Amino acid sequence: MNGNSYYSRKLHSLLGVIPLSLFLVEHAITNYTAFEGGLEGFNRSVSFLQGLPLVLFLEIFGIFLPLIFHGVYGLYIAYQSDLNVGRFGYGRNWAFALQRITGVITFIFVFWHVYETRFQVAIGAISHEELGATMHQIFSNPAMIVLYTIGVLSAVFHFANGMWSFLVAWGITVGPRAQRISSYVWMGVFVIVSALFLLSIVAFRGDEFKEAADAAAALISIG
Image (cartoon, rainbow, N blue to C red; front, side, top):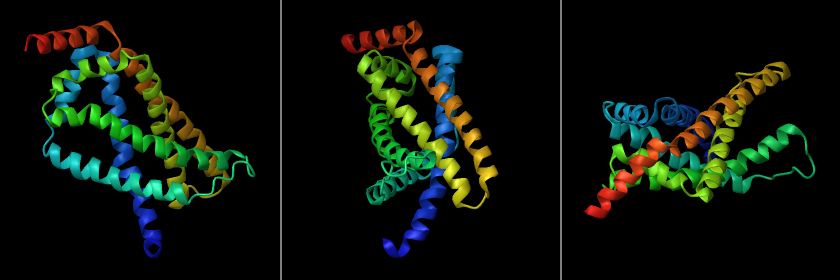
């Protein structure tokens, strides 16, 4: 892998932006519809996504395969990294260390989340219309709220800080002033996208989603 490390790192960096960052933002907005529009709004958003042309192709080649490469190669990079925060405790070095740490957390969290949701749909255990109820069941457990919050904040930090690094590495933000402004921009993006996800957690714990979860449980018990 060393011989191709330059191109592998460039591909890893590019896939982090297109399509994975776009997917993260889209996912945040979709989940936020649970807060803004309740169960009906969330189901409408899910139905819209599932009605897109070639949705399975988009999921495989636009999300899952890029995610596997970005995640696995990211673990390799994290393994090779020297986290010198004890010796060089300034801001960007801490951001470098956190980028690697949150990358590992995000990789584990995303596959766990996919298993609890998209995989269950794929095997027929639940339907797309039952995703809201499933999310309520997950967040009925306080431990899951803590774990999901850690996972979400890690994923959003990894995205926002990764975007800052991408702009530097690709020669888009050149010079201290441009990089300082970029850091403020992506700090703002981190706050906004994190808020969308956290508000969706609040929404999924609401009465409307609880009723859907209770109805789904009643159907299972009858069956």
